[in-house]
Amino acid sequence: MSKPKVAFYWCASCGGCEEAVVDLAEQVLDVVGAVDIVFWPVALDFKVADVEALADGEIAASFINGAVRTSEQREIVELLRRKSKAVVAFGACAWLGGIPGLANLRTREEILAEVYRDLPSVADGAMPREEVEVPEGRLHLPRFDEDVRTLDQVIPVDYYLPGCPPPVALIAQAVTALVEGRLPEPGTVLAPDVALCSECPRRATKPEDLKLERFVRPQEIVADPETCLLAQGLLCLGPATRAGCGAPCVAANMPCTGCMGPTGRVRDQGAKALSAIASLIAPSDPEGVAKVAEQILDPVGTFYRYSLPASLLHRRVGTDGGRPAEPSEPVAAAGGGEPR
Amino acid sequence: MSEARTIVEAPRAATADRFEPRIVAFFCTWCTYTAADLAGISRLRYAPNVRVIRLMCSGRLDPQFVLAALREGADGVLIGGCHPGDCHYQEGNYNALRRVELLKRMLRDLGLEEERVRLEWISASEADRVQRVCNEMTERIRELGPLHLSVPGDGHRRAAVAREPEPVGGEVG
Ligand code: SF4
Ligand code: FES
Image (cartoon, rainbow over all chains, first blue to last red; front, side):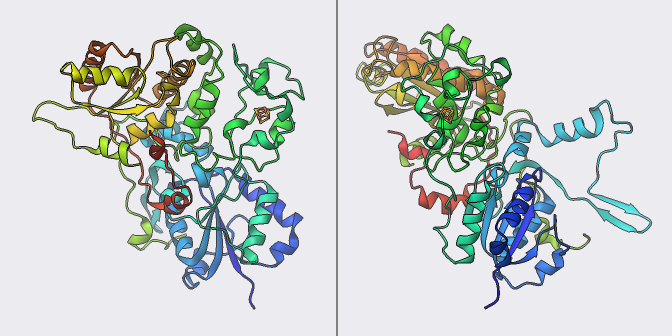
């Protein structure tokens, strides 16, 4: 029996997820030895044409990390979708939009103007063009889309591996399950469906009925290493974040920022986290409540740090008349995949 | 999902030159909803733009409800509960206040005008206040104009939704 084929791809991401795959390879060589990697741009020299040459559905699983922002990313993930039995959204960016998803606070035009024209370090202010003629022929750049999208806003996704990056133990479990053909129900998030507090070593010190007069930031206090961080006034999102990471941030005295995403019944991670934190505010009069609330300087960056594109509102509204355009037609449909 | 969806999807009755806003209201059953009932019994007319959803208590207001209403087509969201000290469940309205305050701060950073979300304490006897608040809010949202969101379809969430049969709207009581 031939080994199952797997592919890895990255979209709008930082490279941390790729690092997690490398860590996995070191720790569980037998698992990796049991599969045949057919595409992995970061590490192996396969071409898009190699993937195109495969039969539809021939890849057992594609692990795709990163949010989707460009025509090239759309083109490749659509190709991988066609060629794969299962697609796994790998990491917070692919599942929820991740840190790159915070770009949805700005319009495409604002971002291009800032980066290519307004920054003090920009000299000539040339805007990138999607097509340019040079003596050798015509060159193409991928299109920079209107907004950042989650993977499942672009292609159907079978499984989600949460985390920034996903914990190696969860990746190993997922790969093993795939290799052994023990596939969970499609749509499953491959992590425990409980809140982080339930596996937090500080859990015993979390008060039943906590009320806070003041929120503090990590640099403002020396946090006690054993007491629940939330009880110390730090914005720990543990109560509204999925478990499965083993709480390494909390162990390092840093509050949870929510990278493992929401639990199963939550539709909008930021709204749910906001709800959990808001109910801890001690005052009950409007001025008192406002005083405590304003200590959360950046509510979007705090509550939607990893999930703005997946949120109910998806992006900031209004900055461009409230109507960011639909992304242009996928390039693949227009016969893409040529010059690469 | 049914209730919220049908309520918000009702077509905007726009006359040629006037924008008719769609406003979703979450009223607690013990005070504001009763006041709205009383307004009806007393034949007090108020803007038909407000579609009321009854909650047991304003403390049941999950901020997801507000965002879901906006996503499904509401131009504004009104929340009504008992006056401070009068909540049937003692503290529910204080939690509503805390959530709405923080939510409004976040919505401001997401580009929404402050007045699109409004919290009011209205007791069971204040039918006239229901009338005034609904009319005021309708006028204000009319001035602001429609809310245009740009959200990608939920098409590819099929699988995930099948396993989690209760999207946020389904919890709206
Ligand atoms: S709030 Fe944070 S520190 Fe406290 S128990 Fe939960 S995860 Fe641990
Ligand atoms: S019952 Fe009316 S606000 Fe709680």
